[in-house]
Amino acid sequence: MTTSTRSRMPLSVWIVAVALPLLVGLVAVAVQLAWLPELPDPIAIHWGADGADGFGPVWSTTVLTAGLTIGLVGLFAAILLSARGPAPTAIHKILAVSSLAVSVLLCGTVTASVGIQRGLEDAADAPDITPWLIGSVLVGLGAAAIAWAVLPRSVAVATELSRAEPLTLAPGERSVWIAETRLSGGAVTVILLAVGFAIAATAFAIIVSDGLVWPLAFIPVLLVLMCASGISWRVRVDPSGLTVRSQPFGWPRTRVAASDIASVDTSHVEPLAEFGGWGWRWAPGRNFGVIARGGEAIEVTRRDGRRFTVTVDDSATGAALLAAYSGVAR
Image (tube, rainbow, N blue to C red; front, side, top):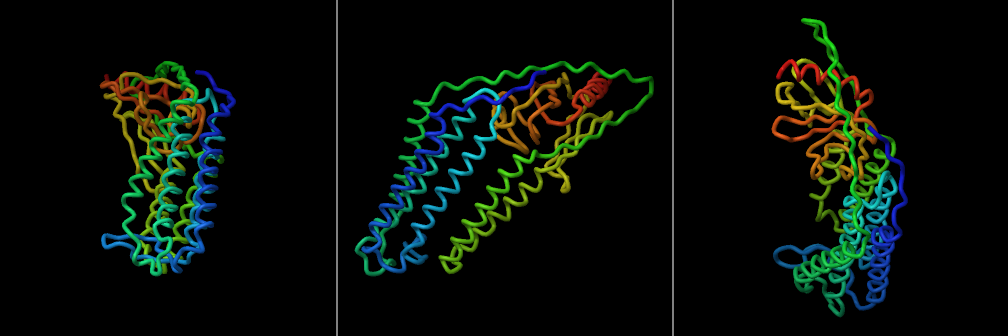
């Protein structure tokens, strides 16, 4: 089991993830400001099945574009700054091109919604925004594809597994190993930034629309619940097998029966590089995992080949006891 050190992220990744999205946002804001004298006040900011049905101050779209661009780019940058290990991995590249694609989609859609209202006396007469939305999606995906092609080739993350030696138990002896694992301070900071940004953006949208888009308030509420359920986890190894459950809600919960375990290993996990983040995760080739922070982990392979990983301190002890019980069960 080895540890990984921080590697320098290529400059091209920062250009795609930060510089280009900020440039797109700057251009969008400049164009919208240039169009302000030609726009009705209030301006349409929401479209329904029957056309424009939500309105706000003429400056609202410009403020929204600037705020969302800075917030989203800052969030992607914060996640990439937390990366350790080889770079760029496929996850790093996905984050970078996603930052660019979201920026193009957001800025393109909002700027188009402003442009189609130039010269109108009443914003209620604004035409359908759907074609422009589709166009922005396609341009964003195209920009992401080009950026992916020009970024350096992804580096593989080598995971070294150490087979756990079964703990020696006396005949009839029953032992239980219990541990808790929590998200690191850096991960919690990134999550708080994301939740705070979602709350601020939602509050702004509700205020400028005079409450028209109030259902958006459910988004930050769901984010808070999801984040709260992924900060702290309880890991238990007993004769029945491995159980990992969220605290304090008890869900999500995963149980791997001792009789279903083919092998137990310990490993060193880099959350961003291997699983794309923290909490309840899935990664190609690694299957599911509870990734609270970087470092030592218990990795279980089921008899059908599926794998489950949980990062936890003193993983060697928990893995040894689990290997003993899985051997007895088999």
